[in-house]
Image (cartoon, rainbow, N blue to C red; front, side, top):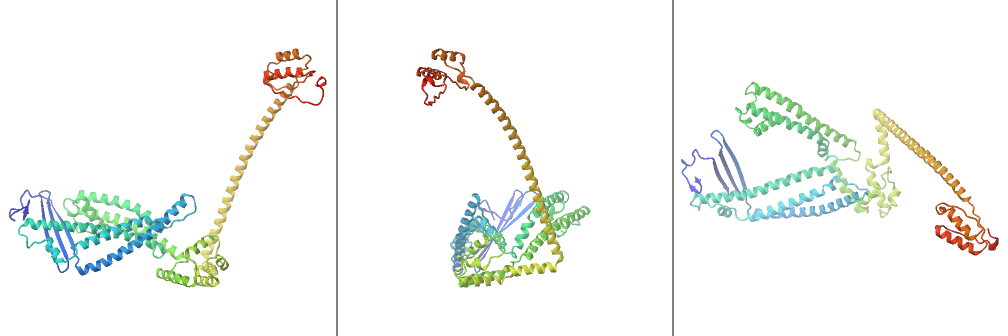
Length: 536
């Protein structure tokens, strides 16, 4: 035995001061290429409590023959990842274009597969890293298994226990490194599994799982909150009352594990340890197993029934393998008969969403098909599906209505409800229009009163102007008349007036111009051809 780098006899290795003991066992199978290390760690926390921790590590080594096949498989995986990465780049580009259209306010629709493009790119990058790293580690550990084991351990050639322990510790480090890579790979596999389940949403029959989860998500989340609260309460009570004499309930974590198994219907051996434990078990099973667990099952069943009814009412739904056959056969026939791409046909149909059916003439004159034969073969192929034949669809609807009078009554009730709803909406719109007209009428009345008030003010102003315009000044002497006028009417420039007078000579006009200039007035002399001595 080894303590602090020195060998110690077995009888004196453990004493009262020992706090931990680590025992390492190495198992080697060269013919299978396997190395297993068992690590037993014992911790003496107190005189009454001893904790044992077990760790098992495995390492699988590759021989030269297995390495060749492994490299071929790794190359195919990397090629598949490269194809997925290129496809993911195109999907991210399409998503960015749709987000840009949505930002600009243009019509745009985004499907679930398109919105998952960023997540897929991250997942593809993680898978590529794991594949490359795992391949590099495997190549480094390749070669002869016996040579690798002898070079790593070399226990038979070592003479000291310290050297053997050093080799064993290096082996454990190497195994732990591979173990961490394995954990990383397990996380990638789980993420790929979740993404694969989400991808099944593309088909109605396969979307039963995802549809049920999406419908039951809200109810399951709220029920899970109740389950966690009840489980924590019962675990705390069990640890408090029974932890002193039942090892499975000695702490909170162990109590949660034991009660979780009880919630699934498994009764432990200690359920009848005493009367209090029996009542505790009965109450716990009644609350968690009979009530809460059945609530969760009821939520899931209800969601499943909704998805199943949707699949039954869906007219265009077939089986998964049938849809695969129809998709492949349609692609082959389209290539043989010269049909246009499905994206172009979907674009033409989406522009006619209001129309019940697309006619033969519309397909012929859409400039998508090469000739009439292509249109005829296209129509024959897709009219073989009952869900796409308009006449058969009407016949099925009539037959269904005749066979199910309750359904007909329900349709009539729905039609009456829609009519009542339309009448109600019309009445509401008429009331709103009436209120709007009344408000407009009030505004027009207020505007009319305001205009009448402004009109009266304008009339009063005109009367004032007329009174001012009646002032007449007769000029007799040029100098005396201008001075007298300037003295008697000092504010004439601030109020409009009309001056009339007789001017015998041009000198009178000059005097008047000077007065007008001092008062900052405007002056207009009309020449009517009359001499100055006769002008008024």
